[in-house]
Image (cartoon, rainbow, N blue to C red; front, side, top):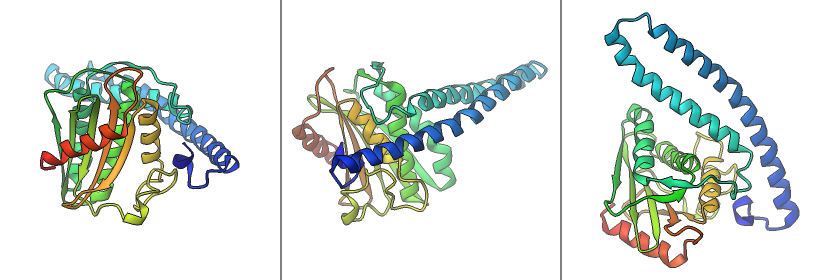
Length: 260
């Protein structure tokens, strides 16, 4: 945790950064919750207005409003837990299908990626099965990683999200064709407020790491031999277990052998 909070391991420095993050997250949560409430109300009003439209128009618009409703509620849930990110034990585990999370995140971010001429590909191996996880927090971690990849690629490239399992771990890899991570920055990319891009505020990767750590997993980053970066979420398949170093290395070999 000391490393995640910064390079100075002294307790005073850690506490200072934790207090700063707590104040920041409290402010962010407050600023986000108010417009979310307003948006939710207006979506409900739009749904009422739809009753005056022709049936074919309602059938076309209802699914889109349903997606907006679902995402607003997910954001509200994220905001409600935002202040507890420094305490990653506060999870709500349930049976989760990784395939659904991977496909949902890719579908959610494809429009933004397409606007930059970036293709997002999703691939879930048949061996991937249900795991115990907090679906909201795990979705947020993957969203952060894919957004990070989109910002790294910037224009004209592709991102691949792959889910697969080894003997005792689930790996979700986000691979991009961006410029990669400067070697001297690799040790710092999970620090709060650290960023190598003009977009973002340097909290996305740190939040993703806290969520994964809360699941007793590991989040790793490396440069790919063919160019670009590879971020990997590794989660234990057995409840109560923790991902071991050997599982990480083995899973990286599996991913590289797929030609990604």
